Image 1 (tube, rainbow, N blue to C red):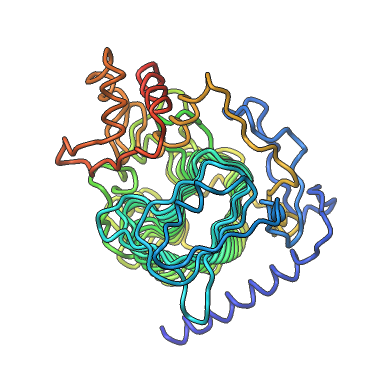
Image 2 (cartoon, rainbow, N blue to C red):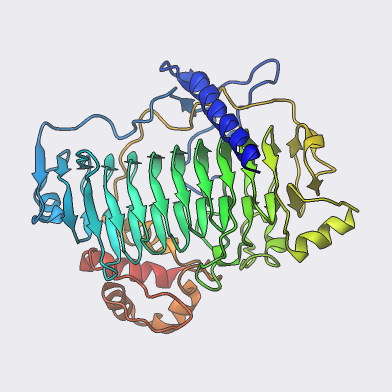
Length: 516
């Protein structure tokens, strides 16, 4: 086995080298179909996208090796924060466009950025970097709702909620952070567009180490995620690439989901390529009843109801339940804690499985998988399992794998996605929030990360909240400001007291007005 893993490591390094050689051209590359079918362009963005800011068909342009979407510094103003000072004080005093340098030392606070163009840079000196320590009492380390934000260079640990959360901001870069034991999520962009998450090391997360929620045009690359429930999750999001990450010793490695009950109902155009997905056998320690809390330990890559997902060039090894699984919502209810959403397409269509190195998966699979294998008289350790209806799906070199549920898959007419460097956009207008939209954006950018309308996620369903507060938005706003633990079967809600009173009341009223 050690020899096999050594070979896998060499293959992984070689795959990264090929990728860098293919995508290292700085010249913009327009994504177009190759006449010989060797390259893949992805499905055109749907004209009926749930996001009013979804990319128009034909507008996706790659930008070669460039992963800088926040733009250059917007001013020459640089502020330095020393140990003993508060980072939040520097943020409050800063004009938009300011670069804030945080020197190595210990800091224990929550930093909230609601201005555009702020570059929050942890200064790494040798092996020392600034440490944000929540001491097991604070909920969130860094939250930002501004646009064109950069967060890099921090060591973040012992928070109860999130390490870094983007709340409806566009054009963000989150890189080179070390995140350990920060509660529910490590890096969590929500309702944003045009984001880069790269070169981070994340471990010990109760839900997802990297969780991209209801977002568009996001690039997740060269991260090291381990010892969490979910490694990397793309949820209700579009135009995302997850590549060249090392994902190991989680419960589930990489996920592409449509979670029922959220306001955005689609996930599509997701490329999962050139990752090493290894030994994701950690017992599930997610919140009981949550979606990821039902993922079987030993899951390498899981697709649930997402469309046009490409799984290509990954090394998938040592995942005891399954290497790759695709499941529809109806079947997922038997494997995970999922409720069916009548407004969401429950099936995964357009799944494309290309050349992946798969070794020693499914060696201790669960009874449900064994039962499905028996229906096709399949034996051996399963590499790939597809449950539920699917159309326009394909696979190449299927003889290399033990597959179940792929008999009606076509042979893919392309071998790789090299023509697509990334789905990042050259220029996205900063999100402007009108006063009348404040409650809706806060709900989508913050609340929907933990609350679906009918099903269970991290927090209770919106319907239960409505039953408690329907005629009392002021009471709900006060609870949002200073929540207390009411339910033993749900984790404690973090206070959202960084939001101003007007926003808290607006989001309370909007939540109580929801009908789906």
